[in-house]
Amino acid sequence: MPLVPEIEFDDIVIAEEHTGGHEYERCKAALWGIYNVIKKIVKSSSDTLPPNTNYNFENIRKTLECLLMIGVNAKFENASMASLVYGGKASEKYKRGMPAAQYLFQLENYGFAFADILSLRNDVPRHKLPIKDIAQFTFSYSAGDFSDVMFGLKLFADVCMKKNGAYFYTGDIRVAFTNAPKLYSPPVDEVFWFLPDEQKRAALFIHDKLEDMGCVRSFESGYMLKYMHHKNKKLPFATIYVSDQMYFLPESERHIKIAFKFNFRNIGSYVEYLDDCTDAIRQTILQSADCYGCKKACGGIPFKFIGKNYSKCPFSAFRFLDFSEQATENYVRLLELENNAM
Image (cartoon, rainbow, N blue to C red; front, side, top):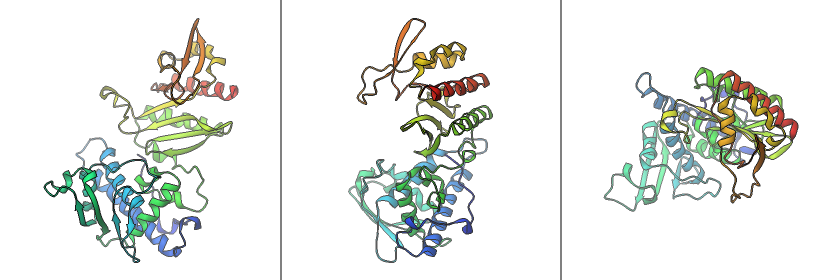
């Protein structure tokens, strides 16, 4: 999860398309309010961790995801816009479900208040309720340190849904600013900040090379940077996964915080370069998932290496975990070869 950006009130310049016809100064104050509340949640969650322990991204993310779900799906209770009524998932734009009730009601620790809770299970403590059994509640902000927070929540959630919900988790209100690009993404220094030195060096090196090729990045799902190439604007050219806990890695490899996925769709035209790659890269390519006519009708990535025919699935193949200097140089050369073959 990226750092919460350092933003000053005077930095806020909201694009008119995001004000929804509301008074500009109110929108500005409201965005400032929700930004600071999210900042407070992230800081408070990290401050409660014991010394020398990993930053607990998952707990923070799930708490903030509850807040985003409310912002996306709830309706204002009245014209004052000081409270929201949540009655379950209503937006088709947001595909994920509400995390567990224990995260939902953690929001009370940060100045939010719940009222008029309708539950299908009165015999269960509310923090242990299945989400499906919470039929409705009224939600407001009563800490008093920032104004118009509920209006800011709704405004920011709507902007994130127009772009991508990942920005919500660090209060990155810059996504709403004038001149924010369509594929907005936070600076990579804010995304890679927590990586171990070797992994950070490799990530920055690959990122710089992708930008040199003219790729445009976007930050998605709170843990991946996708890079789109101007020669193919429909499919990602590369993806860098960045997370404190890589969901697809076994427990023994949880020290790994990034993974590279490169879509070498034309590898057949430069497959001989594999002889110059590290063994880890070579084995990743040769042992990655085969394509057997998957439902996505991807057609597979065919190539022949040392007399053997391969057909790899472009949706699951070529995910790399070697961050050595030689491997990083190999990645760059492979990306150059792919770029030339497109």
